Image (cartoon, rainbow, N blue to C red; front, side, top):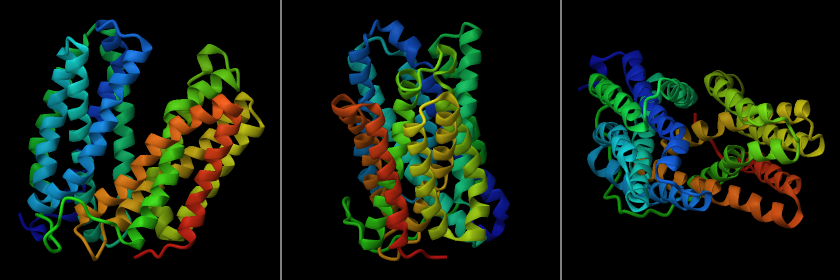
Amino acid sequence: MNVNTLSRRTHRWSIGSYFFIAGITFASWASRIPDIKIKLELNDAELGGILFALPAGSMVSLPISGWLVAKLGSRTVMLIAAIIYPLLLLSLGAATSIFVLTTLLFFFGLLGNMMNISVNTQAVAVEDLYGKSIMASFHGIWSMAGFTGAAVGTLMISLGFNPLKHFLVIAAVMVLLAVIMKFGRMPKDAVIGNQPLFVKPDKILLKLGLISFCCMAAEGTMFDWSGIYFQKIVEAPPGLITLGYASFMGTMALGRFLGDGLVLRFGRKEILQGSGILIAIGLLIAVFFPTIVFATIGFLLVGFGVSSVVPIVYSQAGKSEKMSAGMALAAVSSIGFFGFFIGPPLIGFIAEAFGLQWSFGIIALLGFGTTILAGITKFKN
Protein backbone atom coordinates (compact mmCIF):
# COMPACT_ATOMS: atom_id res chain seq x y z
CA MET A 1 0.00 0.00 0.00
CA ASN A 2 1.51 3.30 -1.10
CA VAL A 3 1.14 6.29 1.19
CA ASN A 4 0.04 8.43 -1.73
CA THR A 5 -2.97 6.21 -2.42
CA LEU A 6 -4.53 7.02 0.94
CA SER A 7 -5.25 10.35 2.55
CA ARG A 8 -3.36 11.49 5.61
CA ARG A 9 -6.61 11.48 7.55
CA THR A 10 -7.25 7.82 6.66
CA HIS A 11 -3.83 6.83 8.00
CA ARG A 12 -4.44 8.89 11.13
CA TRP A 13 -7.80 7.26 11.84
CA SER A 14 -6.37 3.81 11.20
CA ILE A 15 -3.38 4.17 13.51
CA GLY A 16 -5.59 5.89 16.08
CA SER A 17 -7.76 2.76 16.05
CA TYR A 18 -4.77 0.64 17.02
CA PHE A 19 -4.01 2.98 19.92
CA PHE A 20 -7.63 2.43 20.99
CA ILE A 21 -7.19 -1.35 20.79
CA ALA A 22 -4.09 -1.14 23.00
CA GLY A 23 -5.77 1.08 25.59
CA ILE A 24 -9.07 -0.77 25.94
CA THR A 25 -7.38 -4.18 26.06
CA PHE A 26 -5.23 -3.19 29.03
CA ALA A 27 -8.09 -1.37 30.79
CA SER A 28 -10.38 -4.39 30.35
CA TRP A 29 -7.89 -6.61 32.17
CA ALA A 30 -7.37 -4.03 34.94
CA SER A 31 -11.13 -3.68 35.49
CA ARG A 32 -11.49 -7.38 36.36
CA ILE A 33 -8.46 -7.85 38.63
CA PRO A 34 -10.64 -7.91 41.80
CA ASP A 35 -12.85 -10.65 40.31
CA ILE A 36 -9.88 -12.77 39.25
CA LYS A 37 -8.35 -12.31 42.71
CA ILE A 38 -11.54 -13.69 44.27
CA LYS A 39 -11.79 -16.50 41.71
CA LEU A 40 -8.25 -17.77 42.47
CA GLU A 41 -8.57 -17.01 46.21
CA LEU A 42 -5.46 -14.83 46.24
CA ASN A 43 -4.28 -12.75 49.17
CA ASP A 44 -2.75 -9.29 48.67
CA ALA A 45 0.83 -10.58 48.69
CA GLU A 46 0.08 -13.28 46.12
CA LEU A 47 -1.70 -10.80 43.86
CA GLY A 48 1.21 -8.35 44.12
CA GLY A 49 3.68 -11.05 43.13
CA ILE A 50 1.55 -12.16 40.20
CA LEU A 51 1.02 -8.61 38.91
CA PHE A 52 4.79 -8.09 38.80
CA ALA A 53 4.88 -10.53 35.86
CA LEU A 54 3.20 -7.95 33.63
CA PRO A 55 5.89 -5.19 33.83
CA ALA A 56 8.54 -7.93 33.74
CA GLY A 57 7.15 -9.04 30.38
CA SER A 58 7.10 -5.42 29.21
CA MET A 59 10.77 -4.93 30.10
CA VAL A 60 11.84 -8.14 28.38
CA SER A 61 9.85 -7.08 25.33
CA LEU A 62 11.55 -3.70 24.86
CA PRO A 63 14.72 -4.80 23.00
CA ILE A 64 12.88 -7.66 21.26
CA SER A 65 10.12 -5.34 20.03
CA GLY A 66 12.57 -2.79 18.65
CA TRP A 67 14.49 -5.53 16.87
CA LEU A 68 11.34 -7.09 15.39
CA VAL A 69 10.07 -3.71 14.19
CA ALA A 70 13.44 -3.05 12.54
CA LYS A 71 13.43 -6.47 10.87
CA LEU A 72 9.77 -6.99 9.93
CA GLY A 73 8.44 -3.44 9.86
CA SER A 74 6.09 -1.81 12.33
CA ARG A 75 2.97 -2.38 10.16
CA THR A 76 3.46 -6.17 10.34
CA VAL A 77 4.37 -6.28 14.04
CA MET A 78 1.51 -3.95 14.94
CA LEU A 79 -1.12 -6.08 13.18
CA ILE A 80 0.16 -9.30 14.75
CA ALA A 81 0.26 -7.74 18.21
CA ALA A 82 -3.18 -6.12 17.77
CA ILE A 83 -4.69 -9.56 17.17
CA ILE A 84 -2.82 -11.63 19.76
CA TYR A 85 -2.90 -9.00 22.55
CA PRO A 86 -6.72 -8.89 22.98
CA LEU A 87 -6.97 -12.65 22.38
CA LEU A 88 -4.72 -13.18 25.41
CA LEU A 89 -7.53 -11.72 27.51
CA LEU A 90 -9.44 -14.96 26.95
CA SER A 91 -6.62 -16.99 28.51
CA LEU A 92 -6.42 -14.57 31.44
CA GLY A 93 -10.15 -14.91 32.04
CA ALA A 94 -9.93 -18.70 31.92
CA ALA A 95 -6.79 -19.05 34.13
CA THR A 96 -7.33 -21.53 36.98
CA SER A 97 -3.99 -21.43 38.83
CA ILE A 98 -1.41 -18.94 40.07
CA PHE A 99 1.29 -20.38 37.81
CA VAL A 100 -0.86 -20.17 34.68
CA LEU A 101 -2.01 -16.61 35.43
CA THR A 102 1.56 -15.46 36.16
CA THR A 103 2.84 -16.96 32.91
CA LEU A 104 0.02 -15.46 30.89
CA LEU A 105 0.54 -12.01 32.44
CA PHE A 106 4.20 -12.14 31.44
CA PHE A 107 3.20 -12.67 27.81
CA PHE A 108 0.39 -10.12 28.15
CA GLY A 109 3.01 -7.54 29.17
CA LEU A 110 5.31 -8.65 26.38
CA LEU A 111 2.63 -8.35 23.68
CA GLY A 112 1.38 -5.09 25.14
CA ASN A 113 4.76 -3.46 24.84
CA MET A 114 5.27 -4.93 21.38
CA MET A 115 2.03 -3.19 20.48
CA ASN A 116 3.29 0.00 22.13
CA ILE A 117 6.57 0.17 20.19
CA SER A 118 5.07 -0.76 16.82
CA VAL A 119 2.03 1.54 17.02
CA ASN A 120 4.17 4.49 18.12
CA THR A 121 6.54 3.81 15.22
CA GLN A 122 3.57 3.95 12.88
CA ALA A 123 2.40 7.16 14.58
CA VAL A 124 5.81 8.77 13.94
CA ALA A 125 5.39 7.98 10.24
CA VAL A 126 1.89 9.51 10.17
CA GLU A 127 3.20 12.59 11.96
CA ASP A 128 5.82 12.96 9.21
CA LEU A 129 3.01 12.99 6.65
CA TYR A 130 1.39 15.92 8.44
CA GLY A 131 4.66 17.75 8.98
CA LYS A 132 3.52 18.91 12.42
CA SER A 133 3.02 17.56 15.94
CA ILE A 134 0.08 15.13 16.20
CA MET A 135 1.58 12.48 18.50
CA ALA A 136 -0.21 13.69 21.63
CA SER A 137 -3.62 13.11 20.03
CA PHE A 138 -2.75 9.44 19.52
CA HIS A 139 -1.88 9.09 23.19
CA GLY A 140 -5.10 10.92 24.00
CA ILE A 141 -6.97 8.16 22.17
CA TRP A 142 -5.16 5.60 24.35
CA SER A 143 -6.29 7.46 27.47
CA MET A 144 -9.85 7.68 26.14
CA ALA A 145 -9.77 3.95 25.48
CA GLY A 146 -8.71 3.43 29.08
CA PHE A 147 -11.80 5.29 30.30
CA THR A 148 -13.95 3.30 27.88
CA GLY A 149 -12.49 0.01 29.07
CA ALA A 150 -13.15 0.90 32.70
CA ALA A 151 -16.74 1.93 31.88
CA VAL A 152 -17.43 -1.24 29.89
CA GLY A 153 -15.93 -3.28 32.73
CA THR A 154 -18.31 -1.65 35.20
CA LEU A 155 -21.22 -2.39 32.87
CA MET A 156 -20.19 -6.03 32.44
CA ILE A 157 -19.94 -6.47 36.20
CA SER A 158 -23.40 -4.93 36.72
CA LEU A 159 -24.83 -7.31 34.08
CA GLY A 160 -23.30 -10.29 35.87
CA PHE A 161 -20.79 -11.17 33.11
CA ASN A 162 -17.82 -13.14 34.45
CA PRO A 163 -14.32 -12.08 33.25
CA LEU A 164 -14.17 -14.71 30.51
CA LYS A 165 -17.47 -13.61 28.91
CA HIS A 166 -16.46 -9.95 29.27
CA PHE A 167 -13.07 -10.59 27.66
CA LEU A 168 -14.68 -12.61 24.86
CA VAL A 169 -16.75 -9.58 23.85
CA ILE A 170 -13.75 -7.23 23.98
CA ALA A 171 -11.45 -9.62 22.09
CA ALA A 172 -13.98 -10.25 19.32
CA VAL A 173 -14.64 -6.54 18.73
CA MET A 174 -10.96 -5.53 18.91
CA VAL A 175 -9.72 -8.27 16.59
CA LEU A 176 -12.44 -7.31 14.10
CA LEU A 177 -11.40 -3.65 14.38
CA ALA A 178 -7.74 -4.56 13.83
CA VAL A 179 -8.56 -6.49 10.66
CA ILE A 180 -10.90 -3.80 9.30
CA MET A 181 -8.42 -0.96 9.86
CA LYS A 182 -5.33 -2.77 8.57
CA PHE A 183 -5.70 -1.18 5.13
CA GLY A 184 -4.74 2.20 6.58
CA ARG A 185 -1.41 1.15 8.06
CA MET A 186 1.75 2.92 6.97
CA PRO A 187 4.23 1.09 4.68
CA LYS A 188 7.12 -0.96 6.04
CA ASP A 189 9.67 1.18 7.85
CA ALA A 190 13.01 2.06 6.34
CA VAL A 191 15.75 0.26 8.28
CA ILE A 192 19.01 2.12 9.00
CA GLY A 193 21.74 -0.48 8.71
CA ASN A 194 21.78 -3.94 10.28
CA GLN A 195 20.24 -3.40 13.70
CA PRO A 196 21.44 -5.58 16.62
CA LEU A 197 19.13 -6.72 19.42
CA PHE A 198 20.63 -4.27 21.93
CA VAL A 199 21.57 -0.74 20.91
CA LYS A 200 23.31 1.87 23.08
CA PRO A 201 21.41 5.16 22.76
CA ASP A 202 23.34 8.25 21.66
CA LYS A 203 23.44 11.42 23.79
CA ILE A 204 20.22 12.84 22.37
CA LEU A 205 18.27 9.61 22.91
CA LEU A 206 19.79 9.28 26.39
CA LYS A 207 18.51 12.75 27.34
CA LEU A 208 15.09 11.94 25.90
CA GLY A 209 15.06 8.72 27.89
CA LEU A 210 15.94 10.57 31.11
CA ILE A 211 13.17 13.10 30.47
CA SER A 212 10.77 10.18 30.07
CA PHE A 213 12.17 8.61 33.24
CA CYS A 214 11.46 11.70 35.33
CA CYS A 215 7.92 11.99 33.99
CA MET A 216 7.06 8.30 34.22
CA ALA A 217 8.28 8.13 37.82
CA ALA A 218 5.66 10.78 38.65
CA GLU A 219 3.06 9.05 36.49
CA GLY A 220 3.69 5.69 38.16
CA THR A 221 3.41 7.37 41.55
CA MET A 222 -0.02 8.74 40.62
CA PHE A 223 -1.20 5.35 39.41
CA ASP A 224 -0.08 3.43 42.50
CA TRP A 225 -0.11 5.91 45.39
CA SER A 226 -2.66 8.67 44.72
CA GLY A 227 -5.48 6.75 46.40
CA ILE A 228 -3.33 5.91 49.41
CA TYR A 229 -2.24 9.55 49.69
CA PHE A 230 -5.87 10.69 49.75
CA GLN A 231 -6.69 8.00 52.28
CA LYS A 232 -3.80 8.46 54.74
CA ILE A 233 -2.59 12.05 54.31
CA VAL A 234 -5.63 13.94 53.00
CA GLU A 235 -7.90 11.73 55.14
CA ALA A 236 -10.65 11.89 52.53
CA PRO A 237 -13.94 10.10 53.25
CA PRO A 238 -14.21 6.62 51.63
CA GLY A 239 -16.31 7.92 48.74
CA LEU A 240 -13.66 10.49 47.77
CA ILE A 241 -10.51 8.40 48.08
CA THR A 242 -10.32 7.96 44.27
CA LEU A 243 -10.91 11.68 43.61
CA GLY A 244 -7.20 12.44 43.26
CA TYR A 245 -6.62 9.62 40.79
CA ALA A 246 -9.69 10.55 38.75
CA SER A 247 -8.58 14.19 38.66
CA PHE A 248 -5.11 13.19 37.50
CA MET A 249 -6.43 10.86 34.78
CA GLY A 250 -8.95 13.42 33.55
CA THR A 251 -6.45 16.23 33.01
CA MET A 252 -3.87 13.83 31.58
CA ALA A 253 -6.37 12.76 28.89
CA LEU A 254 -7.47 16.35 28.23
CA GLY A 255 -3.88 17.54 28.08
CA ARG A 256 -3.04 14.97 25.43
CA PHE A 257 -5.81 16.17 23.15
CA LEU A 258 -4.67 19.77 23.64
CA GLY A 259 -0.97 18.94 23.52
CA ASP A 260 -0.39 19.08 19.76
CA GLY A 261 -1.85 22.57 19.50
CA LEU A 262 0.25 23.75 22.43
CA VAL A 263 3.41 22.32 20.87
CA LEU A 264 2.69 24.11 17.60
CA ARG A 265 2.14 27.38 19.43
CA PHE A 266 4.91 27.32 22.02
CA GLY A 267 7.44 24.68 20.90
CA ARG A 268 8.53 21.27 22.21
CA LYS A 269 11.25 22.49 24.54
CA GLU A 270 8.98 25.08 26.14
CA ILE A 271 6.13 22.60 26.66
CA LEU A 272 8.47 20.07 28.28
CA GLN A 273 9.94 22.74 30.56
CA GLY A 274 6.44 23.86 31.53
CA SER A 275 5.41 20.24 32.07
CA GLY A 276 8.16 19.67 34.63
CA ILE A 277 7.16 22.84 36.47
CA LEU A 278 3.50 21.74 36.58
CA ILE A 279 4.44 18.29 37.91
CA ALA A 280 6.59 19.79 40.66
CA ILE A 281 4.12 22.51 41.66
CA GLY A 282 1.18 20.11 41.64
CA LEU A 283 2.89 17.59 43.91
CA LEU A 284 4.21 20.28 46.24
CA ILE A 285 0.72 21.75 46.62
CA ALA A 286 -0.51 18.32 47.69
CA VAL A 287 2.44 18.00 50.09
CA PHE A 288 2.15 21.40 51.82
CA PHE A 289 -1.64 21.73 51.70
CA PRO A 290 -2.99 18.18 52.21
CA THR A 291 -6.69 19.03 52.09
CA ILE A 292 -9.23 17.61 49.65
CA VAL A 293 -9.51 20.86 47.68
CA PHE A 294 -5.81 21.68 47.41
CA ALA A 295 -4.65 18.08 46.91
CA THR A 296 -7.19 17.69 44.11
CA ILE A 297 -5.95 20.90 42.48
CA GLY A 298 -2.40 19.63 42.81
CA PHE A 299 -3.20 16.30 41.18
CA LEU A 300 -5.04 18.12 38.37
CA LEU A 301 -1.82 20.03 37.65
CA VAL A 302 0.24 16.84 37.72
CA GLY A 303 -2.10 15.32 35.12
CA PHE A 304 -1.58 18.28 32.81
CA GLY A 305 2.14 18.12 33.50
CA VAL A 306 2.67 14.51 32.48
CA SER A 307 0.24 14.57 29.54
CA SER A 308 2.52 15.84 26.78
CA VAL A 309 5.92 14.54 27.89
CA VAL A 310 5.87 10.98 26.55
CA PRO A 311 4.22 11.92 23.21
CA ILE A 312 6.88 14.60 22.60
CA VAL A 313 9.72 12.28 23.63
CA TYR A 314 8.44 9.46 21.41
CA SER A 315 8.01 11.83 18.49
CA GLN A 316 11.58 13.06 18.83
CA ALA A 317 13.02 9.58 19.30
CA GLY A 318 11.31 8.42 16.11
CA LYS A 319 13.24 11.06 14.17
CA SER A 320 16.63 9.55 15.11
CA GLU A 321 19.14 9.62 12.25
CA LYS A 322 21.38 6.91 13.75
CA MET A 323 18.95 4.02 14.16
CA SER A 324 15.53 2.90 13.00
CA ALA A 325 12.47 4.49 14.58
CA GLY A 326 11.51 1.22 16.29
CA MET A 327 14.95 0.74 17.83
CA ALA A 328 15.11 4.38 18.94
CA LEU A 329 11.68 4.14 20.58
CA ALA A 330 12.68 0.92 22.32
CA ALA A 331 15.90 2.51 23.62
CA VAL A 332 14.11 5.57 25.00
CA SER A 333 11.26 3.46 26.40
CA SER A 334 13.74 1.20 28.19
CA ILE A 335 15.14 4.17 30.13
CA GLY A 336 11.76 5.77 30.75
CA PHE A 337 10.11 2.54 31.84
CA PHE A 338 12.48 2.28 34.80
CA GLY A 339 10.58 5.27 36.16
CA PHE A 340 7.54 3.03 36.58
CA PHE A 341 9.71 0.46 38.38
CA ILE A 342 11.69 2.82 40.59
CA GLY A 343 9.08 5.52 41.33
CA PRO A 344 6.43 3.51 43.24
CA PRO A 345 8.93 1.41 45.30
CA LEU A 346 10.93 4.57 46.06
CA ILE A 347 7.75 6.13 47.42
CA GLY A 348 7.28 3.14 49.71
CA PHE A 349 10.83 3.14 51.10
CA ILE A 350 10.90 6.89 51.73
CA ALA A 351 7.39 6.84 53.17
CA GLU A 352 8.36 4.08 55.59
CA ALA A 353 11.43 6.01 56.76
CA PHE A 354 10.26 9.65 56.70
CA GLY A 355 6.55 9.74 55.83
CA LEU A 356 4.42 9.72 52.68
CA GLN A 357 4.49 13.50 52.26
CA TRP A 358 8.29 13.51 52.12
CA SER A 359 8.24 10.82 49.44
CA PHE A 360 5.86 12.87 47.28
CA GLY A 361 8.22 15.82 47.73
CA ILE A 362 11.10 13.74 46.34
CA ILE A 363 9.02 12.80 43.29
CA ALA A 364 8.23 16.52 42.83
CA LEU A 365 11.96 17.23 42.57
CA LEU A 366 12.35 14.33 40.14
CA GLY A 367 9.48 15.72 38.06
CA PHE A 368 11.26 19.07 37.91
CA GLY A 369 14.15 17.17 36.33
CA THR A 370 12.02 17.18 33.17
CA THR A 371 12.38 20.97 33.04
CA ILE A 372 16.15 20.88 33.60
CA LEU A 373 16.81 18.13 31.06
CA ALA A 374 14.57 19.74 28.43
CA GLY A 375 16.64 22.90 28.75
CA ILE A 376 19.83 21.11 27.65
CA THR A 377 18.28 18.97 24.91
CA LYS A 378 18.11 19.86 21.21
CA PHE A 379 14.78 19.23 19.51
CA LYS A 380 13.95 18.75 15.84
CA ASN A 381 10.98 20.32 14.10
